[in-house]
Image 1: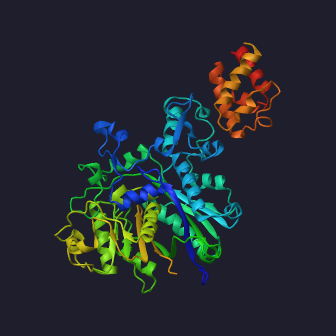
Image 2 (image 1 turned 90 degrees about the vertical axis):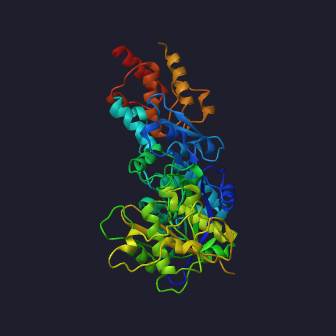
Length: 450
Length: 86
């Protein structure tokens, strides 16, 4: 049950971002309209066996990490060395790459938040971080050595469980920062990143915690990539920079990317009382399911109900809608129509940051939430790159009997979707993310008005 | 194989375990306790045993490992016993 007057502020952020050394470079590149999508040699090396070869990937070297390979198990990264000495070796020994990114992002978020050691280690501080996939990189070689090469279980060492378990990211962060509150992981496919932040928001809003480190992560993994590649849902046929093109009529799939987004949340009055810099105040979080039994296909009615739950009869409307906008043919059309159905044809802008870095899967919602915080900070709307031409024809769903949504083709909403960064007053942003299984998540975050 | 030769080999293995302070490896003797003296995380003990199997070309039984003590002499004894057994 919500506690009246208890609000939640965002006071810190950090993470791992493709082709960027840090959050500042990520911000600079985004607002200058750059794409972080690159040709991925690791995928291209598989020739005709792989369909898509572009990604917003992050290498170990780019994060200052060096893998130490086992002498007992083939191709098994036994542990990692942090060449920048940010994470102790004991913590590295229990972490896969995504968990290391989570720890790095958490340290940055806590530093920005300015929490004391006592606050960080309090029983009122929780950690809620999730990932879309398992610890695939660890599991693949550990299993290969046992099942295919016939080696003993001990050949892969004693850390395959902690480095691959479902909530490994949250567990590793908790062991690093030594918080004494909750430590959990929410999984909701491509809504995971936002789902974890939403859950952490509720922990604070409902009075169960005062602070939380929350977010999502998807460590670079060809094992993850090939699953989507097999589904024929990844973008192909464009140059890397043009591959992610939400809402463009020629879009043909998403760019499978990797990253990490972590935020520090704190009860608003406590944050104010200690003079924290408030990056944003969360107005509400809501999530629901389509309820149509379809694992993959997005639902117009499910998304409309998502908005109803988020707005909760409030008259407040966002200045920017940060959409899921994956660049898949079906998903973008339904999402744009549901946004227009709720928000109307003008008075706001749509931002689709996946156009700049692709789809980070379990990290998407949290990294894109960070882009929303950056938009509030900069008072600029991030562009939707490559949305060159919007469909002048009606979508198939608009031609179905009983359709009650917008009746104009997508090109009628051209003015909502800009291909360049613009400056404007932004007081509120709604972030939307959806995932396999028909799960939908939405959060509304506002600039602190002094 | 001499006992000191085995200890030297074990120290080389311990140097690859990043959770052990390298400075503690200067004075490793038969009486050194992996856990009490070197602060080796207990989860690393099986990794050390497995690397010892590889380095000294022996294969421990599960019972050998279950009954293994935490001192350097315990693993030296085991390696020599297994070599003789094989």
